[in-house]
View (cartoon, rainbow, N blue to C red):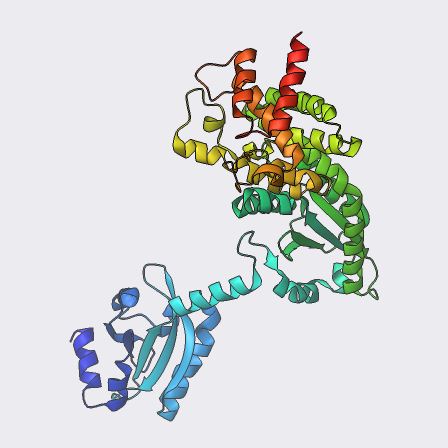
Length: 468
């Protein structure tokens, strides 16, 4: 008699067996616990059809075997349904996590094992548990799981315990100026640095957007200093990215069992705050230089253009009797007026042929990007508005906001004239460059429409005297 036929015979007229059919697979077991019949309904358990003659114990992994066999014996003794969960090893070598319900069979000593595949549910539960404990972007543990990590690590055997508090510098700039994709890239680069620097027995937690914490058992201050030096060196060696990773750190060590680890964590965070304040100005200055160099590397002509615009702007600003503070801001704004172009693809920035309308739309976004860059850096907040409005027009037809007349900051009006003049003579987006006289004639023609007429007249006067 075949296994399936035998299964049908056993189930015929037996209510518990009929109930057992509401499952993914059904095994018939004899008094010795060997499989004498199989019926499978789910594709995931189809391989069980090859298990006739096998002992139940051979199908259950070792960790679950004793509990499963005890459950089967209880069902056989008591004549009642008994259930357990166990991992079943399939004939092909794969494994499935299953719920098994044992029911006494019609034959003396026989059992029915109704199997329901719960593997997908287990994997879902494990995925949920992982998401609850881990940061989705970096894979590090998250803030929610930190108390459990501290409980695991905070033992006498783990002493000394190193705590390193970490913060990403420039996160606001990356997010605000270049978007969250750039911010995520910066986070991932910082995560890579921390993974390399952290010993294998240490753990890293991402506490928030730009905050991390490293906990390293059996690690003293000397070893901790080496970790910090590794972090610093790796950040300094990274020179490919527009906004390179830069990390501020604070370190503390729990050396004695009586110390409170949470107090040590607070000490590390306080040192981080102190170091961040000391390093922030240096980092911002380095970042500004980096962006300027990055822009010049993308397009050398743009770098030379910025130098020329700055010189012309200061000359014109001095002639208009700007104060020393206004001239300082004008100088910074001239340096930064095209910084938003760092976000423009190099193929557009360096294009020699005329730009398409779509490419011009991309170009016209650079004042807003430049504004966000400047506003994200405290030293440049005062000039961010100048950068934002240097492509507005006197007649209100400019961009990005269509300001008109004296609504436009004076320094923006100054940069507007000298920027346009230099682009007419040297700009990359023209088929042929104008002569000096042609460009000045164009400034005269556009006075009162594109340019502030007083600023334009003063510029023409200065340039006329310069040519004498």
